[in-house]
Image 1 (cartoon, rainbow, N blue to C red):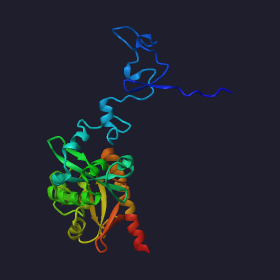
Image 2 (cartoon, helix red, strand yellow):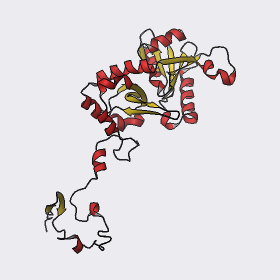
Image 3 (tube, one colour):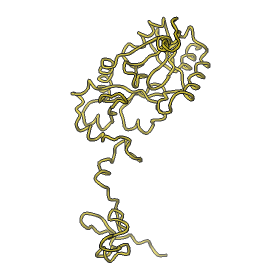
Image 4 (spheres, helix red, strand yellow):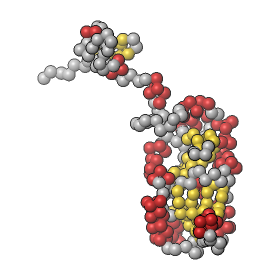
Length: 288
C-alpha cells in the first residue's frame, strides 16, 4: 500500500506555499496575461499553504461582533476600546438586561450576571440623537485591558446608571391618560428609566424593588414587557399566575419586536424576604 506523502512547504516572502508552486506566476496554469495576471488573485493562490488575512481581518479577529459573521457595527469597537479608560469614564457606564438563551454565544465574551433566564450586561453610554442612542458593550477583553474585576465593574455600573438614568415608576393609567382619558389608578405600574432605553434593567437598581413595594403596598409580580420596561402588579390583586404567563406570551408574540423581547416568564418580588425569583419558584416555595 502506498503511504501518503506529506507535501513540502516552502517560505516565500514570509508566506507559506506548497513546494510544487511554479518558480514564477507566469508559468502557472491560472496566469492569464499581464493586464489580468492571476485569475484567482494573489490572496487565493492555488499553492497557498496558509490562509492570508487582510489587515482588516486581522483587526477583526477575536472580536465578538464579527465572529463568524459580518461586523454588526459601523464603528470599530476595538478602536473605541483603545480610546477608553474605564476609571476615567465609569460615570458613562450603564446597564442592559437581555434574554440569556438568545445571547448564549455573546455572553461567553462579555462580563455579565445571570438573573433567572436573563443576563445583566454592561455598556458605556456614548450619547444619543433624536433617532437612536450609541453605546459600547463591555467585553471580557476590555475588562482585562482595564485591569478591573467584574465585581468592580458591576458596582461602578450600578452607581453610574442609577445616577445618570434614574428609575421611573408610573401608574399605567398615567401612561395612557392622554389616549384613554383614564383618571382612576390602575393596579398595574410601568417601571423603566428616564430615557426609556434598556429600562428593564431598573429591577437591578439599588433599593428599587423595595421602593416599588412601598408604592404598590407589598409584594408584587414582575411582567417583562420588553428590554425597555417591565410591568408591576401587586400579588394580592392580580389574576392567576397562569393568566399572567399567558398574557406575557401573547403580548410578546403579537406586539413586541423579536429583538426587544426579554422573557416569556413572570417573576415575583417578595418584599418581606427580599427575594426576586421566577413566579413559579415563589409559588412552590409558598406551598412547602
